Length: 464
Image (cartoon, rainbow, N blue to C red):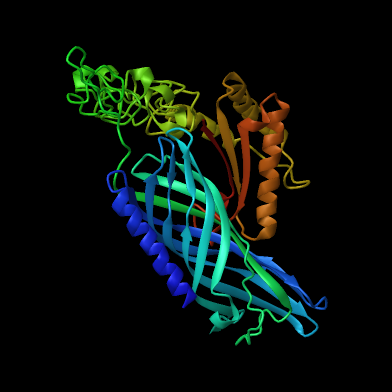
């Protein structure tokens, strides 16, 4: 009954004030969140509480009654969810609880404007309990309204940001002075069995939406001799002719600021591309891509020639200028032909001479892979060709008439012997590749003596 009487009294005060101050009254809606906690004084030293904060919603209405040019009274009627989380520990174990307390809150702060950007709020707050519920660690919920007093008296203070705007932000704190626990209660849920006194505290942040009333503007004084024209934003354009009366502008745009259509921070009067976002360096236009290769000129090392990103906007290079770019050229520093993958082609007659030289390679019978001195003349000619052109390379392939691991080892040893001789004659090691194939690549019938004789051969192929 006491709670209903206080609520009725509060509504009567607000309605009475509305009647007497309706010409200056403003008000609207409030919505936001509480961040609150509970703090108790424990009588039983064998048990303890670990108090934690919790979030809760808040919403309602506010009314502002001006008391002067900078001071006003701004009562509110809010539904406010307070409470807290806590851990209760005694000799039986530890328990986790969340206590929700629903209040009809009536803060009645004095509002002191400290300029257009901020106002200070300070005053009392009256909380009337409308519901309470406790939740344990298993999410079981129990109503425990009878465990709490129905009224809580708070002190509140905070700030309101942009108080003269249609939408403002309020941040304030609340500290409860009343003991929330009933001294003679028989609680339905023994969550505060060792708590003698319980107080609430919290912080609140809200958005305030003014739905009626407004900041009162000064009225121009008119006398028979002097006429003062209202110019709220001080841009020299009277409000009656100013399409943006609260924002300084220019006459060209009827009192509004010079527009920035594309939102790039460069106003249209200075923007050569007013409908396309750009940069100041290019007078409001985007960074250009002159060659249309998708890489803007600021990042393109070849801005007038289409290229690719991995070469920083330049074309893929052709180091030897043979018309085949380096990425597809097997000889990027030696001009060649497309048919030979960018490498020079070996003249057929030259290769034919080398083939004849290869037939002059012979082996001693001592080891089977020691070069006979008869081979020197042919290999010396091959060495001369390689030393004359350091880009020229040869692949030495040795084949046997039989197959198997032993045959392949023999052929590899013979190929290595040829390479060693060429290197000893001044040829670079990198110019010679030696491969022993054994009998894996026959060119004649392996079942006849004549075929096996053809299969046993040495091949020297020129290439770049």
